[in-house]
Length: 252
Length: 289
Image 1 (cartoon, each protein chain N blue to C red):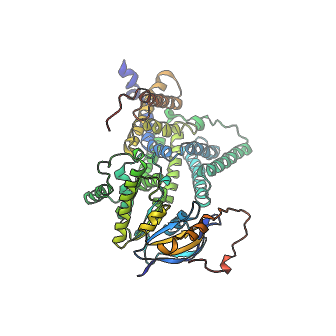
Image 2: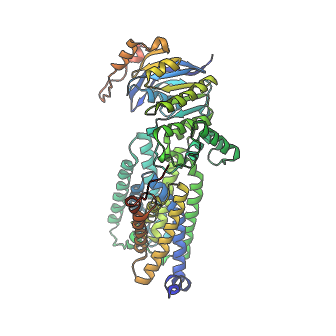
């Protein structure tokens, strides 16, 4: 199957400090990939690099023929200003940006789509609620509803199951598996190892660089997890320029 | 009696009618900008921008005297320069916008004071500082109306990205590149409305007719559209009542308008439906769902 994503010696970071160092590899179209690693391992930065929010410091990411219209991104809910006075309907409706753009109207068909998306995450009747009145789990559900509306071939989820109850997790995980079943490519940054083991076919273990990448059963070993756990969070202003380009890839 | 006090000044005197038209135009354009300033946590940015345009207006005053176009052009140039430079530095370096703006507006202020000092003229800048809406002529009114129209048109164009960027900036960056231009256009609108406001209220109080109505609206609704409508009505009401107060009591017009808005703000803090103090103290029985 053709690859949806190619990483060519990618280094991503901020202000010359790498958060993900020298990643090589590819994600096949239709894959269901878990990205795991301790806090600060670079998971969110990698996902932001894929969706174009963070530019590589080095190397490149190729989207395998996908353009930005084919990518849906679910940010961590902490990135969202929930005090902003916007209703659930309008917030989910932003998922239609690519159809509506700056001036496009939200007609009857679009309204139906939005209502269906809200209903499919179990939030019927919440359309007019301000997002600031939602619980953490409800907020996560409407983020999923927005991804649904985007109808993208590549779906990138940044810690989508954080701090939500088991019922919500099960409902949203079913959606993720449904997307996978439809042939969409899904990458998700996760912390729940049991979930990864049971539901994700492929895993990338990150610790500021790739520790291991492959079928989950082979990658999710105590040894790899121990290596990832030992990762030290380094942010040294006096660090020397990286010489790893001479060493080549460290990818799995 | 009531008619004489509340309506009479406007039927009798042309300068009061012009002032009322101006304050309504300022309200229609400035109040929505104020709502976005508040929701984007940029209320004090508006205040800083008001300081940033002061030297530009002063230089215009120095070069051409009390000439509306020179002062407006000076204010716009200084304001745009500061807004755009601060915005660009913030977006390209990761420096917080307020820190970036503080640097540029202080530089702008210092530059303005230096220019004035070197000229060595003793200038009466009271007009620039505090405005005089009652002295507004037809030409000035047309400029104020034109700026308000431009503001509403541009705001309509950038409304959607502005809302999405306010609530979920990362999402907008994945679906569109409109966020950056929309933000810069918004800063430009802030400058236009501050310059617009200083004809009536002066540079120091111009931001008042933007921020206070937004603060008032915040206590009455959780819906953005409704908030904008309330802010416009609150601004226009403050303008009208301030003009009447000024006419009847000789309180200067600019401060009178802002003082009325302040009273409305205090009433909203006390009795507002959304987070008002009285509502918090006496919330009534809790609901079933």
